[in-house]
Image 1 (cartoon, rainbow, N blue to C red):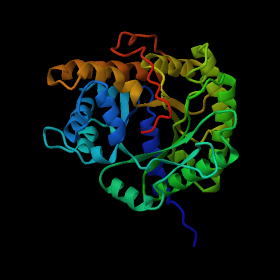
Image 2: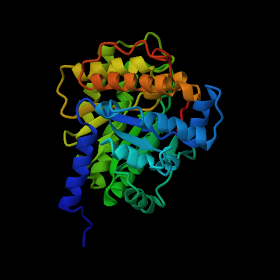
Image 3: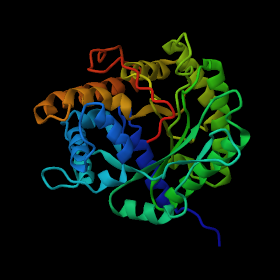
Image 4: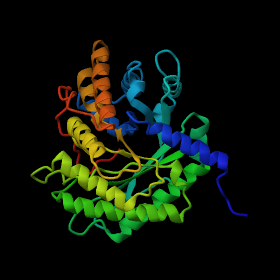
Length: 361
């Protein structure tokens, strides 16, 4: 007897995916691991203690009624899923009461592939079904899994492309069997001095392999979302591509590889500054090419950098830092409509590059 999703299960998955990419809204990626969050806190001189991590996430999740106008979903880290606000309510419930969908990061990080030049695959499949079932019971409605591919003269290899495509497809099928919408994230990281054209070629190969694997694994595409990199030049390449060039290269790449059945694409910011990520997202949405999917955002650093800088770990800065967060959320909400015109350029860290070499979460 074949294992299939029921019609009701498909409808529920498709409904959640569509809600996440509601026009004008996108995802706050607040799924940084304890170690990564420690680096963020260290940048403002704050100790990496659980209470400080909780206070910063609370600051984001309780930033006011305007948050839900621009944020449709929040990706949480395991620790954060079970934390509570000062009022004793779980963060999951605080989000749900605002009409915001909770999600969960489910991968367990990258490990190097034998015989390769620092190429990686992502681990965490062994007990994924059990964890997904528990996360679903505890309030999560979607999940995220990140794979990483790097551009050099000899990478990514076909081994790395195929291995990561297979892992993403297996993850996606397990999520759907347990009622979670999988966000598929095959990130071609920006490390290097490669050109826009090289990034486009590699991203196209990675996405083509990813969707072949998703198809082979019988993943229900209408109940998934894609979280790719925008097609940009390498972080150390000069000159920087214009928003129009980034938009054209990105949309062409997606049109060649991503089936129209996929309801939405939520871009990662990939170390771009807050402002450049917003401007490029707006350019992508205003591009005249055919775009059968909703094009939105799933930003971490590009939604939080100014907020963190304004907060500095001090209670007296909570209100001003929340205003910074809302400013960036509003900017990106406008960008999903192709209407962002730089209104948030005065954010505390708007033009600061957020690139981190070999970035891990």
